[in-house]
Length: 149
Image (cartoon, rainbow, N blue to C red; front, side, top):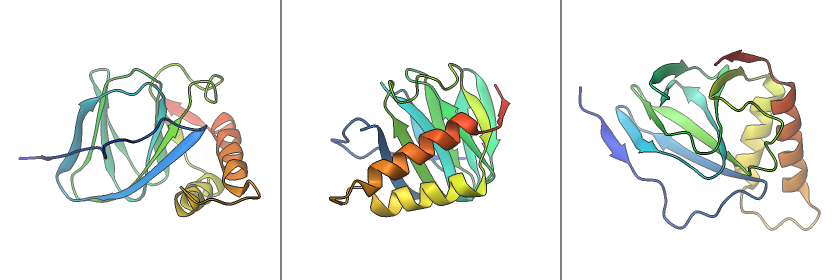
């Protein structure tokens, strides 16, 4: 089966404390193996993702997300297509989260916070609303049920 590579957008800034990326992944497309200088939560609000990290592969449904600590080489794709949401989290902001790649359960609240974070990403809201959403996401990650490492 042939997979088509997807390139990450150029010039993306590091998280502050969270940067949200939202995009559609077409069927049989993937991000080639890479690593970040920050943590990442890999999630799909719709569809199924395939994540490879540390010589292991995981299938992630919309009820789950995948935690990637900074520096971990990984690959992300979708066999049938997915609505991909990627949360890039500053190392300091994720300091109390797992040090190994891990699957976590996504609560209904965390899902809605991710959807909202994508909707307000890049907005210049003077009252700090995007920062409050980021704080709530970090709180939900700390409270999440971690399923597998």
